[in-house]
Amino acid sequence: MPSSYAAAAAAASSSRKPAPFTTATATTRKPAPLPAPAPPPSNPSHVSDSDPSSYSSSGEETDLSACDPATASVLSTYLSVAGNGADLSKVGIFLNSAARRRSPPCLICLDPIRPSDPVWSCSASCFALLHLPCIQSWAHQSASAAPSPTWGCPKCRVAYPKSQTPTSYHCFCSKTEDPPADPWILPHSCGDVCGRRLNSNPDSGCEHTCLLLCHPGPCPPCPAVVPNARCFCGAHREPRRCAHQRYSCKGKCNKRLSCELHRCPVDCHDGPCPPCAVRGNHKCECGETMVERLCSERVFQCKRECSGMLECGKHRCERGCHGGKCGECPLRGQRTCPCGKKDYPRLECDVEAATCGSTCEKVLGCGRHKCPERCHRGPRDVTCRLVIKKSCRCGGLKKELPCHQDLTCERKCQRLRACGRHACKRRCCVGDCPPCAETCDRRLRCGNHKCLSPCHRGACSPCPLMKTISCFCGKTYFEVEIGSLWDREESKTSQMLKKMQYRSSLQTQA
Image (tube, rainbow, N blue to C red):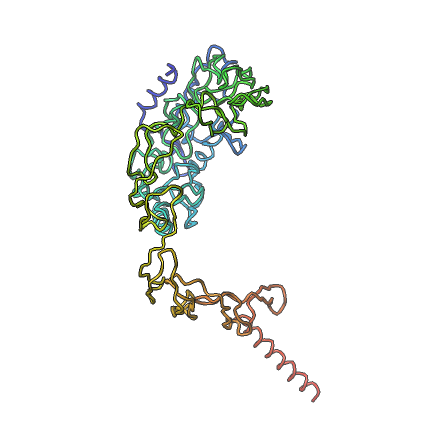
């Protein structure tokens, strides 16, 4: 760990809470000045904070130069190590929002989140702030409705197991339970050093912890300087920030590829090298076919059979293309009779094993009965012809039949289908009645049309035919179902207006 980072970490751990800051209603006190940033490395041109995968994904730039005292106290230790050019664009959005007491509303109840409200923060992905009772109710309902006992964050949908349902109110760094509402620190913060590990990936090589005070949002990139950071290919070393110590030197990788013949021609890169793309003429495993192929695909098999002589000198190899010798004859050595009950220890490969004369007793295709024939060569007869007493699928008929034949009765099923209105009527049904194929044909709520959906339980869907109604002046209008309450009221109103117009015309004529 660099000395500047160690000193900053020790200083951060020794301070419990930031100095009080001024608000509109508080007494006017000047905040403690920020500590001077640590001196840059001896070779600053070689220390790079750039990275292809930028820490800020949104492209926004948050101005922290004129931040309020609460934000300044949170960032002071970090900036003393990283300098004023550190990338704090993402965490700055959360800090400024929290310091100004302008947290976004809870995404579940849509009520504003006050500094004294118990909250929960999604620490896995989006860091959204939600009311603790709201997220507890959300998690309980989601886990009970889902087939697996998990629940997802309302914003980013990251799945949490049911065991991680929040049960208590903790600060952002999870070290303090029920943090008090202190007007001199960030809301929902304990005021201590965050201390969370900056990179949980064990392959990153970073073992540093966050130097910010307890804060919302993600932790910033690790500001420590690694003096001898190695590039991906290992050819160059230079001092770099710990968060970006894995880098590309832009030179050729030159690592030996898996073929052990060529070297990687790609620029210095992360991860394994690509397959060797050098083309050449390569032979198959048996050596009879030569084809131009990629070096990474040089081991292949042709489509011809081997047909090489086995060690017995009487039979030929029936395997496909292969390397090495064909091996021993599989028919030489200890063998058994066709049913496997009698052993023949010394038989030549060209001599057939004799039948033993016993009953075969191999299991037939039904899986319940055994072959009753004498020991025989060739494939066993998988069709079981043993006559047994069988029952049909629904259990309404019993009859003696060969084992391989199925028995079905002619009785029609009288169970109601899922609609609850029509019978199944399928022959020899075992209870898995299919969905109803009839049309519902019930009159819809509009009173003018019928339901055309397949027969179903419960209420029918609203009538798909809509009608536009408006107020008297015509400026406000909306669509309603034909025959709905609004439509009926509009019809009554129009009829009343027609009657009034008719009476008015009669009075005018008189």
